[in-house]
Amino acid sequence: MSHRQLRTPSSPRKTKASRLKPAGRPSRQTGAAFQQRKPPQIETVKQTRASKSGSASAYTDRLALLLSTVNELSKCKSLDGLCRRAVTLIRSRFHFDRAGIVFFSADGRTLLGSYGTDEKGRLRDERGRSGPVLDAHAAEVRKGRVRLKVFRNDILTDGWGKTVGRSDHAMAALWDGRAVIGLLSADQLFTKRRITADDARILELFAASLGHLITFKRTEIELAETKNRLEYILGATRTNVDIIDEAFNLQYVDPEWVRRYGPPAGRKCYAYFMGRDAMCPNCGIPEALKTRRITVSEEVLPREKNRVIEVHTIPYREPDGRWMVAEFNIDVTERKRAEDRMRTSMKEKEILLKEIHHRVKNNLQMIVSLLNLQAGKNSDPKILDTIDVIRRRVYSMAVLHEKLYGSPDLSGIRFDEYIRSLVNDLPSCGQDGAPVRLSLRLEPVVLNFGLAVPCGLILNEAVTNAVKHAFAGRAEGRIEITLRKARDGSVRLSVADDGVGLPPGFDPAVSDSLGFKIIVILLEQLGGGLKMDTRNGTRLTIHLPAGE
Image (cartoon, rainbow, N blue to C red; front, side, top):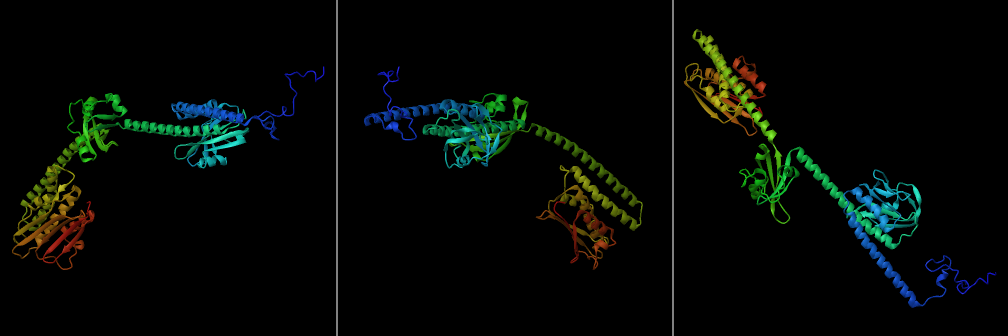
């Protein structure tokens, strides 16, 4: 049977036109399929409209699927879960062979891996991997110059430099609303299918939505971490937080309060914490709201074994105009107990110190009494004078211990009161029997005990020297003692008399007088100064620097 005999009506003769490639797959050479048996123009218009209508419908369906997908991704609990699910869905629902997500480091020079697809189409965990941004296109997207980049039949790498094949691929920017934080890439490595304009648009919209979801999830994670960190710190320091409105209604209490006292909804703060029917007596809320300033108060929690808290009440205004207070409640129970122990210990030490001063004063008084007894058995004026000088020096120290024993504060002594007590024992007349009048100009000055003792001895020597030597051959004399505290905190003590004065060129540092030697030595120990004025008598001014 010849080949011609095999032809049948159902097998028409193949013409040159019938051997051309069908429409839709045009020849590279001439596209002749579009030249044979051209259909009427009206038919072509109908087909084009139908094609466009079908394409629009398909794109609308893909947009609806995109919205559904984004909604599903928004329910992911973790950032890793979100990225993993996004890579899976972009492939399965939008027909990309492979997909991957990478993030940019803060400086934009490094790619940080997330989840991707390997060369066999398997989901790959790329967390922990990093590498430099080598692709110039990726750098261009990162800088925000373009949102989407599509490449035709391009060489594909795995993001770390390894070549895996060729196909169309695209990369879209992941935006956080301000900057590009990463890339979503997709390709057609296996099917070699062309990435259409609709594919690219879907990928761009998917990346935009995913970028916001990632940013939201990161913010959510950061807030949760901050909240957990703060709650841990508050719990570790036993510091509790609550928010209360103007009517004492609880608006918020931290988890630790809830654990101890239960839900706060609909409860007043005084009922919730204290079990009271009305505002607490020491409540700082009214004052804080009135003055708009932070107040600090103390409260005792009866339901927690009388735990003591220091309440810092901070007023603030809500966006709707309502005034509220935030209370930071710091547990000070241990501090209060330590303060009580310290007060008890200080009281015990104070009693002990007072007892010591009392015994020292008694011992010094005994020495004074012994000196008086010794003086009563002597008639030699020189010996009696020496005994009297020693007695006055001992007495000046005894008076200090007596003052400290009766003082409520052992840290210091009122030196002006000490001077008044000390001068009561001074003789009322000079060596030749001339009466001596004392004038006191004293300001309230507190000196510590270590400073008061040498100052008392200096004062005793200065006054005793004036009484004994300043008024020889005079009918009467006058001594003025002045004590004041300067603005810089220094203390000035002066002893002035209207007597005969000191010899010309007198230098207390080289004087043979034991009294002046004692004054100079004690002032050197104190870091003080001595100034002498011999006009119209003698004035000794002692200067003690601030802080002494």
